[in-house]
Length: 342
Image (cartoon, rainbow, N blue to C red; front, side, top):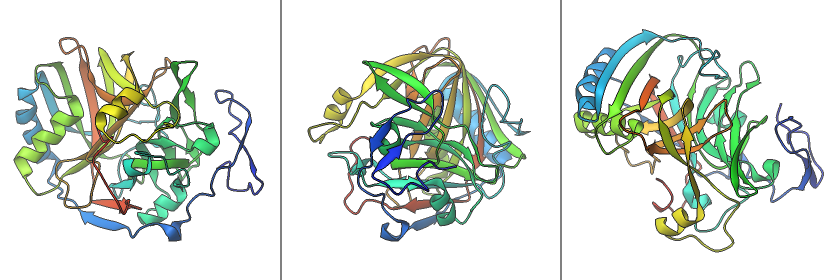
């Protein structure tokens, strides 16, 4: 269950999970209620047949990787290794939710921007949704700023979410047993049903962009202003990747990407890595979307925000994707900017 749902005092107990510090932290501002959000905008996405998408990716990704295979397959059971998702599949009413955004983090944090997956599920008209993706943890649960790897199934109440934080100057990965998150989230939502998915396997990167960026650019070049939106899970089977983990909130305003990058903690993580893509959108149809966002967790204690692999000759990815029908832009900042969206 959600650990704050029944808490009314000023002291909020953190999730009692063996991998989470068990301590009590003071509640910050009360979370923003759903009725205070800015009006949700909904964008219909272009949904080409999966077979067509495979042909586009098979051809286009050849400019980015030495080996490319794109096919339509029956989804494996994503609850099993090596995926460890909360839901069996990626099928059933696939959609993306782009919640909040970097303007709630920088230049200065707006701590009251707290969300719950149940509310997001209602907003996207899928009350028992299964979610995966990338976001920020709730600082009133964790006690500090952190990277979140949402991975939850509301239909079964299964929560397989992780978060990465800085501890004693080093990044650590821990379980996160709540559906509350903060500030921003890019989420792929579905009914979690098994079905057909896009399977894309690549190795030996020859281009300058990462796997997800390459997919997004190939789709953008082919479909132009017809927005195609994907979400899903990728296993980085071989190689190393550059990740970042946010430290605690900055005490001074962060106004440029350079200042943000100087604040972030970057490091290299080793395969195998489980990559959750909550947003891969080929074209923003005027919704102020974060068109790409992927977070990573693993079974060996490494995780964070994915940037790109740093071992192009050795790298190997196997990705499974659903094709979203719609994108819901939820509680978009009234004043926006492009800082901190890399």
